[in-house]
Amino acid sequence: MRVSKLVERSGVPLATIKYYIREGVLMPGETTSATQATYGEHHLRRLALIRALTDIVGLSVQKTAEVIRLIETPGDDLFLALGAAIGALPPYDDSDGDEQRDYPLARAVLERNGQVYDPDYPAVAQLERALTAASAAGFPIDDDRLDHYAAHTRAIAYYDLDHAPEGPARATIEYAVLGTALNEPVIAALRRLAHQDLALGRFSANIPAS
Amino acid sequence: MRVSKLVERSGVPLATIKYYIREGVLMPGETTSATQATYGEHHLRRLALIRALTDIVGLSVQKTAEVIRLIETPGDDLFLALGAAIGALPPYDDSDGDEQRDYPLARAVLERNGQVYDPDYPAVAQLERALTAASAAGFPIDDDRLDHYAAHTRAIAYYDLDHAPEGPARATIEYAVLGTALNEPVIAALRRLAHQDLALGRFSANIPAS
Image 1 (cartoon, rainbow over the protein chains, first blue to last red):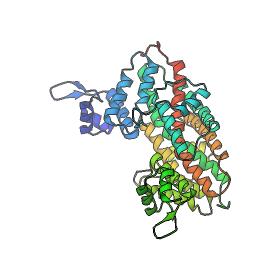
Image 2: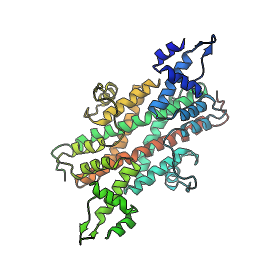
Image 3: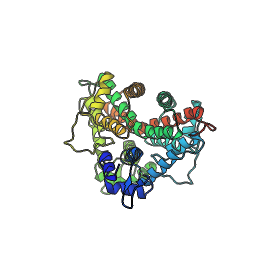
Image 4: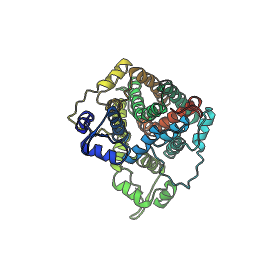
C-alpha cells in the first residue's frame, strides 16, 4: 500500500510515521521509484505495537525502540531475552547505583516460596522498594499477607504462561511484554472492584461510621 | 514534644512541616506561648501518612489533603466514604467529560461474575480503559482470561477485607487507601517474579530462540 493508505488504516499521522522511520523504530517501505515506497501488513502491526508501547504503556520512542529490538532479535536464549524485554518496562529504579543491592525483604518472600529468581532482575528491586515503602508508611506487609498474594499472583502467572503462543521467540516475547504492561492495570482495577463488591456486604449504609 | 523533636523523629524538614500546616494537611501544634507549640504522637502518625501519600503514591499535597479529609471525616456511610477515598487515588481519567460513559467491556466482566458495582466508581472507567487499550494494541483480553484474573484478584480482595482493622471508620478507610495504593506495586512485582520462576522451567537456555 502507499503511505497515504498506511496513514488512513493505522490512524497515525504522516509526520509521525516519518519520525518513527527516522528513529529506526519503524522499518522503511520498499522503494518503488525515486519518490514512492510501498508498505505492508507488517508495517501496520508494527505501528500498533509502537502506539501500544508509547501511548498506553507510556514509553519514550527511544525506550520503545529498545524493547522492539529485544523482541525482534532475541538471541539464542529465550529466557534471557524475556528477562531483558520485561526489565526494560517501567517502573524504573531511580535510586543511586551505589545503594545497597541486597533486597532482604524481597529475597525473604521469594525464598520462603521456593521461587527461582535472578537477583539482578528489576522486579526484585521493584518488590523491595514497594515493601520498604509500605513499612515506611507504617503499614508493613506481613509474611502471611505476602504469601497469600504470592499464591494468587502465581496462579495468574501460570495461566499467562499456559497461554503463551507457540512459535517463534519473537511472538513469545511480544506476548510477555504486552501481557505484562497491559494486564497490570486490568488486575489492579479488578482488585479495586472486588473490594467494592465485598465491602458492600460488610460496610453498607446504616453502620455507624465511628 | 517541641517542633525540633518532631523534625528529628519524623525526618521531615521544618520548612516542609510549616508548609503542611499552612496547606491544612497537618494540624497545628498546641500553642504553649507566643513563640512555642507542642506536638504529639498524632503529628508523627499524620506526617508518616502524608509522606506515604506524597512520596510513595505520588499524590500532590492538595490531593493528599483531599484524601486525608475523606479519612478523617467519613460521614455516616462507610461504604460511600470508602469509595470516595479510593476514587481519589490514581490513575486519573483524563478523557473528556462528554465521552460516552457506558463501559461495555467492564460491565460485561462484572455482570458475568455477579459483582455489584457503582457505575460511577472510577475503577470501572479504569478497567474499561485498560481493556480498550489492550484491544487497540492487538492484544485483546478474552473472557476466559478475564474471569481467571477476576477469580484470583477476588481471593486477594477477600483476604484484604478479612484483615481490615476493627474500630473507627477512620482506621478502616486509612487501611483501604494505603492497602490499595501501596499493595498494587507489590502484586505487580510478584506476578513478574512468578513469570520468571515459571519461565525458567519452560524457556531456559538451549531451546532454539526462533
